[in-house]
Image (cartoon, rainbow, N blue to C red):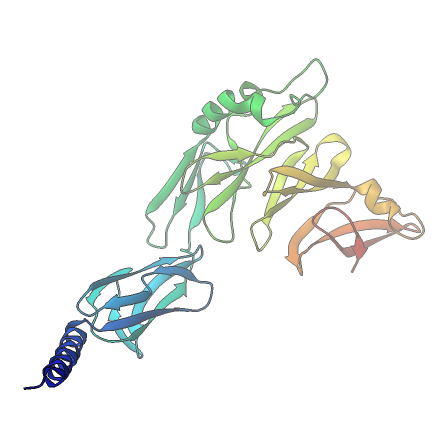
Length: 323
């Protein structure tokens, strides 16, 4: 047989062999599948596990709810496949997983005092809807914490007069009857006070229910706290202050983001804001937050006539208005 015929047959066979090998190898390569994850509702949680996987590979998808949400289910094509945050399965086909979260409904808690009177209490207790105690905080706990941290809390030591600084031992040994739960039921505000010569000096703080740690606002209040009102977002505390001296009332607002005082409003300032320069020492009351403004009721004397007026003010103490 001629040489060129042999060479041609050899090349043909080699090509066929290569084609057979390529077909064989391509048939052995595992299939790949894509796993996608959708979060519902948007910005309610984070997820892990999306990507490309080879057939038969073990896949784990994980879900982590953001603050204010909790994980509900993993769903595929509208069908629930797991109620666990972590779900493991083999790669068998392309799939789109939906991580479903739901908004947390704050547990309804009630706040009570262990006390022998209706003015103050030595222990603040939180109970759930079944009447079970979920948290307790005693004045002794607060005092021990205050003794360790007092100098770090205040840039200047609080004092009635220069010769009379107020320290934890000078506080009346109980909480004022003003404690209030935050909108999310995860914190509560409280107040304590000292007393000297018809004058109160009060201090306002917040206790985190998860850690049990308190924080005090870096500013004292001249007057005794009578009412505490949280803003809807839980970032401000507004309260009425009263001192026995000439029945004077004040309205104060604290910023909880940095634990500092925004403003304290007195009657003179309120009177000066009225056209005609009214005068009064108003009894601030009916505190309420609306449209990111603090609303309240106070009395004003104008042209010898006392009027009860609703007012509002921004959280930073600006833009005082009659409503």
